[in-house]
Length: 342
Ligand code: GLU
Image (tube, rainbow, N blue to C red):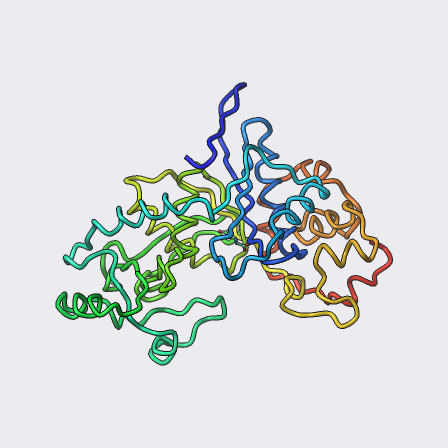
């Protein structure tokens, strides 16, 4: 168990998590997601626990000290968490054990569940259909089902390879469809071979992938409420496939995927203010209550951006309020940061 936690005074029904990646300072989009995760748990009173997991699995992208900035900013905003902080970078042994468990399994057609993939990125790009904008490239299956002799030969030559988890190979296979209910977007259904494909669980540089790490961590930490951007809807389908192979009958999870905030995640830069992250907001004199108020408004909990403490947003909070407004939000950072009424 990753940093186990129980409350003395009673039953725990909801375990949520904030799971920022320490690749820099938080943007408004990250705060919006953390606020939603916080509200989802804190609205449950003492029967809810909110964990903080620093997703620093992708070493090369991690910015030194960004974990501290994130914790300081969360503190400043009044978004508290329970128990020790979990760092993915310290959980390699658990990921290794999970990989071994997956490697022992086979699909109903006898193919191994995990197989080495020798394709380069360029090979995959050349052979794949264009992705749908969530960065998901469906692996064309080139190395799936390579004869054992070929695999052994390539491995003995020390050929660079990643490891992939196989999904059912035919769309009509009984297991191919993964269904889950999302609190905002409703019932979701993904056909794994058609819409997701075999994903990497260990990269060719030896690092475990996001998909494996998150699946292992959410199970180990007992997470049963996952709040994150709707760009990860497809990831939920593959994570449910991985979970099912890590543990028989894994516990149900309440999924809440949020509309995205266009223009506030750092993708689009603002000329005058730079990217509107927590650093630039503070430099421009923003107070914590203003940042929370804007995020509460983006979540649909306030009718206009006005200063608010996270506690105030708990009154009457339900996911239904979010579900009534599913379209992505669009904001012009420049125009937004210079607004005077906030
Ligand atoms: N670490 C991811 C992020 O910062 C979140 C992943 C997740 O919630 O599963 O966007």
